[in-house]
Image (cartoon, rainbow, N blue to C red; front, side, top):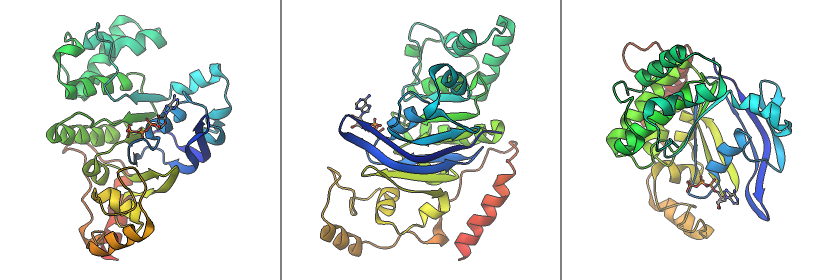
Length: 304
Ligand SMILES: Nc1ncnc2c1ncn2[C@@H]1O[C@H](COP(=O)(O)OP(=O)(O)OP(=O)(O)O)[C@@H](O)[C@H]1O
């Protein structure tokens, strides 16, 4: 069913450099959330903090009733089993074929027999469309296939939470579209909680239930997709429209008068009537119950 992650007042620094502070949000169980933000705002640091690889200075991360920032290494090891992580490059072992790469977590963390491992590996490879590529080495396949292999590996321990670190980086737009469909289909099938860090605005508009935006060391906003897509908050509007006009500058600083002038010069693109349609699960995949509620809420926003 996926588990909820509740983050409260989280602050992370490296030495004197505050990366972000006082971040509070709840990733609802079983839903897909996207975290956006200009380069260097600490999105990857946020993912690493959620899995307990980095320790925050302040705040809590509550999963299944336990604050994981307070856990000792042994207990943290148990909590980490709830997570599957898809790293940017798939993080595959270059000398192992895809089958062995995907089987790796099962061989490391479980006592399953090789026949059971085979069943699971082939099931996950099938889910991501990689059947037939078992014997290939990571160096012999495309970036898109490597991502899908990384995703299959993230799925083998049946995680409750899946973190995606820029799944679309380095892929052409067609591969990104296929990957987005795969993410939506997987979420409908396995119903885990998904958090995706991305720069890709088209993906952020179509795929998630919720969107968050990190900017200038703060979480500017986190909420349902329709709420962010129709927001008047200048940072949110600028980022979701991929514009130069607005508070986000090349070096992240602009003066207020310039921002105001720029915003006055551009038209309003937050019209709820033109809310980007959500990407639906492929035909034949049963939609989780929440889809009905989402469709109704988005209809309401469009009518308002
Ligand atoms: N282990 C570390 N020690 C010190 N500083 C770090 C460490 N990890 C990350 N940082 C710093 O934290 C900041 C945020 O990095 P992060 O990679 O999370 O940004 P990001 O938002 O994911 O960027 P991008 O979108 O470009 O991938 C950067 O200034 C980086 O140098």
